[in-house]
Length: 396
Image 1 (tube, rainbow, N blue to C red):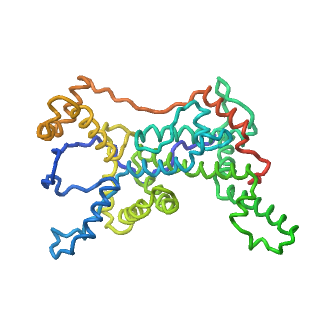
Image 2 (spheres, rainbow, N blue to C red; image 1 turned 30 degrees about the vertical axis):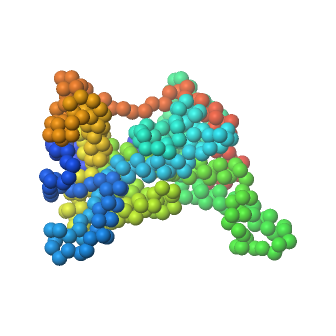
Image 3 (tube, rainbow, N blue to C red; image 1 turned 90 degrees about the vertical axis):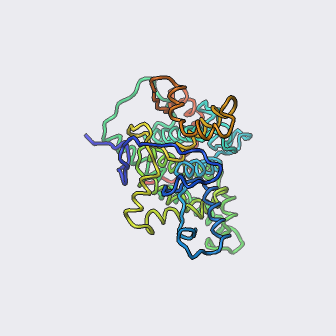
């Protein structure tokens, strides 16, 4: 019997412990009540501090100088914004029924997912992205097993552990390894070279125009290339999300290293391409080991004290802000700013217990894919032949 790993190996896990969180008073202007606390915020906050640092003259006093200050990006905001950029890049064109972007997968799964052009519900966006990724991986596994036209039965089928391991290894080699994408390039280069040798232009394969090569590729090859790229990009988002839930900051930083490079070539991540590598270098190379460990382990918290329920501190703060803005500020006595600062902002946790009842019931929200929705997706994948072997060179 072969042991199959369900979770990646741990790198730098954070101890599971319910934190003692004290809410500070809502401030109109800084009153130094947070002195000594690690300063974290979203990208806009970091850019504001960077702007102040450039405008102010260097101060000779360490207490008033901004040269020694550094900011940490919120872990959840990094995930949300990078995931939105990757999701938009692979979303596709819903107006074209033959377009095989992520919208096609979600539509076949029965998920009414709108294009995430506005910052509304990041949690729903991550859930839809995960559903699309898991359904695509399932079709890859069925194709490797030799059942590309099969549907899932109502009753689960048992397989030996060694065969499962072989199927997973073959699936990775065929669709997720570097050689899988290089094989498509080799196919297109061979076809372009043969066409060029038969022409009278006198060009050699080394002088081929990349844009012309891309245009001359068969549509099926381009669709398969886009799918492989989408699987790789979506895998980084799913891994970062699950690593954050598990509280393994080492796995999270591994994904940040990857995104720091990807951000240079993606729309909407120009500022992250500057600040994210700077933050990763501070936490891994520049700061002393003890201080870096403290800062890394302070990025995630576990409000309920249960394993696999870690969230970013900025996520927890956004949740508290939601209650403050939408429950205590729309009407009633909380609308008065002084009462909002002096009473409600300091006692949000107490107010939550009073509004939710004596017993605090904690729920874990996890997505599910039904057999009917998966079979509907498989029918779409078989119709469009999204993993066609006609032009995909076999990888052994």
